[in-house]
Image (cartoon, rainbow over all chains, first blue to last red; front, side, top):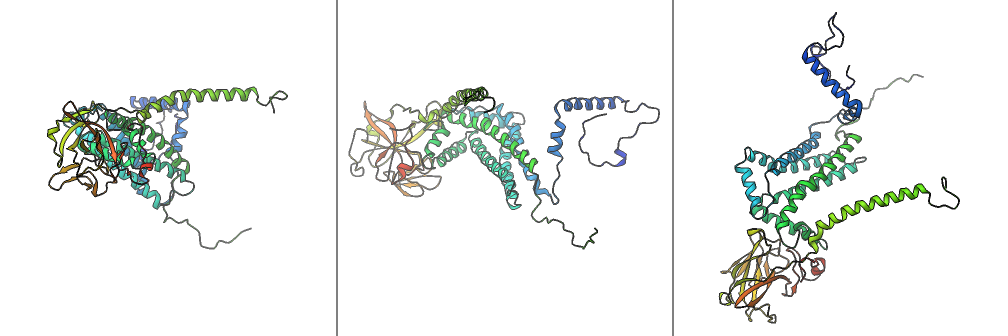
Length: 270
Length: 203
């Protein structure tokens, strides 16, 4: 018998496992399909016996949620899905992209868009997905704010969420340069100069972003490295902390949900 | 203290723990500090480009600008080029004392607001920025829009019968020269202290 158990939804009687017919050996697989399933179960058991992952999985996925949980609560998962979409399509775009400011970057993006099989689709997923992610992150933030879900004991999760918002904006800013057309180039010039208007440290921040006093050969590779290595790593770490706290603290009921208080009199018995 | 000999203030265990932590911190710093220095190194590197020839003296009038293309970032082709507007010094307009570096006036096309490329419109004698509506007069001094200071300039010289353009410098609204600042950084009043010059382009 498998030892690995997770809570299952109640099944209709037709789908419940049937007891073995009299005369057959109890619990022994009969058909090849059953034998295969049995093999899969014992593989899962083998891993679970050595890692105890099922406890963590149950803790993460089978949580109690408050009454009144509704579709607004899916915005966080939607943001996560948007991020995964960006990560996966980004990995495949990096297979063709060349961060070469002397014309190679623009040419490689043109090649992805026009010549690679489904390249336009994958690039479109990444390009439009980035806007979708920013929108979803803001909606998620608004949901948290208007439902009061940032209050004690979830303040730290709000702070982590703000860090994630800033990292998402950093991704949008650095990714905008990579197609290296006129729009990218001038938007980055303007964006870096906006960073530079911060007093005292701003000028040095501009030099750091450009890798020097002018937009130069290092700027594009610097933005590329920040876009595909530095910030995604930070986002993954922050999402891990965010999800840990969500699981640890649980979600909040919507503000219109009231506690059910019994109002009828109850005779006290001593 | 338990586990300590008489008069001992640091036990062997505490000493070894502290040594291991200090050693670990040294190793981590040895790996991470060079990486950080590598990333922020360009902030402190000052590479100036050589003088670039833009034309001969007879090409430039003293009441109108002639555009010339110079390289501001080598090795990246078109993306590293920029336009400068050059004219001959006109004593009636340019009241600063003449030196060997301002016999020709070279105005940068980098808008002092956020760095978009301005263009010279001879009919109205104005530099006009396409992005956010910055307008500058013949001297490059702001007459309208958001820019916080006049357009940057370049040192110029005449060498071997050619007009050459050298390093960039920024000016405040009285056309006093400063080390180059990025766009968006005012140079009047407290501005020159809030936006210090950077080691990468300090003159």
